Length: 522
Image (cartoon, rainbow, N blue to C red):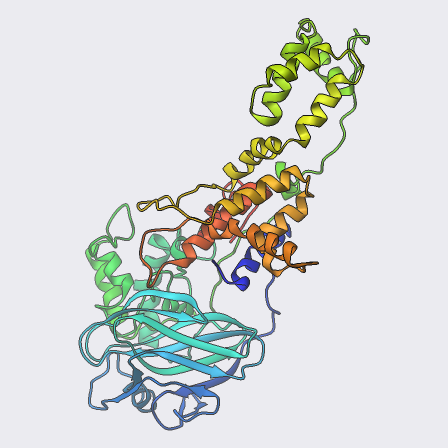
């Protein structure tokens, strides 16, 4: 079972989808919050005071490591080098406590003192970097920036995978692009403007600039901060380190990383980019650009089929007014008359009870039920048959099946193991009982998404509402692993099922990009 907090995510998400927009923090400029030299003394970097490893509210039980003799790549100033060469490793769990609520930006200094390691980094439980390669001995990077919302008073940075050396932690209030001032000589500026910028504009901006119709890989190459930050695969450029710059690997057509995808740059263009990176990637484009997310046209979104309000259509007029006994009959007859068709004769009573019984219970009527109905000449005979069928437990079994199909109910787990789930029948019975009790639809939904969080009048109701969360318990699983299970896949798949079942929306596409058809943006 998921935690109550995780289940609440689904309920909040379903409500949030109905608001055609997204909530963001305020637009005030970012400000420096604090920075910590994780395994060293206080010092000054980029004109800002860094705290030492004994900083207040900083908790880390990882092993300490220091080697000030390693030559760093790329070279850097003395204080930054001192901080980088002294690090924490082993478990890699850094915690900053007593952080005021709000949005923050985290930047993390890492380095490699030995052989390359591959690891992933998470901030407050959200994976922000996957499969990072630490590079050769001496290689260092300032990873990030990564946005994090704090509501519980702490920022926690963790790693998973190979041995990671965490050296320094830089934290800003608000959303900070991570840019640092860089001095550019006249010679560097001329080289960039004549040999680098034209290549980027001609071959990269179509897919990697703020003016792109759809930015690929969340990578913007039209400013220095975004180039250094990189996209989903990491920083595009590591100043001074040609071999570990993904941009250079891409234009060299390194393995499967090949950019531009349809042709390779000219040899001289590749060499110019290599020279630029080797010189420290001097770049006058200091203002970070931003991906222009598509905004939803609220008025247009409300025209989406599942958002349109339900309206009573006007009842049509018909020629044979005597045939129709209800408004439903008039709609049917109007269409028949439009097509020049005649309605069939009234079904006999035997056919009528068979149809009603199959429709409402999925079972045939018994001979005794047929005989009783045929012998009943009262005007409300058929209405009483329908009432009897609706009162039958078989009604919930028949029509609850449709809901079970929507939520993908099964008595076994499916996938490659397909093992039986011993208690899942309780959720099945909950659905049947809800249909038979004519439970209000909104209550039916709330109980399945967050029933264990709802108030209950008594123990019986509490148990029923808890059983309703079987919807979450039977969520799709991916693979058979236990340790390190990719829980996010199950959560995302369940969210998509909620969207399809309740909102009439498909959410899968918007996990990675703006939806092509439904009114959703990432």
